[in-house]
Length: 157
Image (cartoon, rainbow, N blue to C red; front, side):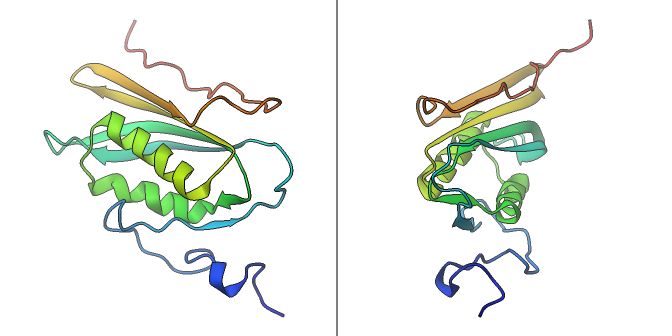
């Protein structure tokens, strides 16, 4: 009998372990574990209201509120590894569009959910807020997909 519900070859690298922030998004390892309900159609939401990356032009920090929604297939992303992956962008320079879409595509390609969408609600840079959205396709029939709940940026007034 093992102490983990995962076979040794698929045991998460981060769950229950001391982990350090990866040096870059490319160096980050995302852990995936078996879905507890592989036959059920349901939605998982992660919100990262304090996401940070760097402006590729100025090197200054950019801030966003990310919302990731997905309908699991056979696996789910382990939340600690996702947190470390998102944290690895703190020293990564990238345009809002590339960062947001890249996160969504990597999760979709590796995890293979039934459906995934990401909303990147970026705070103003140069006086212009930029919101970036990507999804893998149409949501599956019967999946309840609530609004992401993040209002467009509104300045004074």
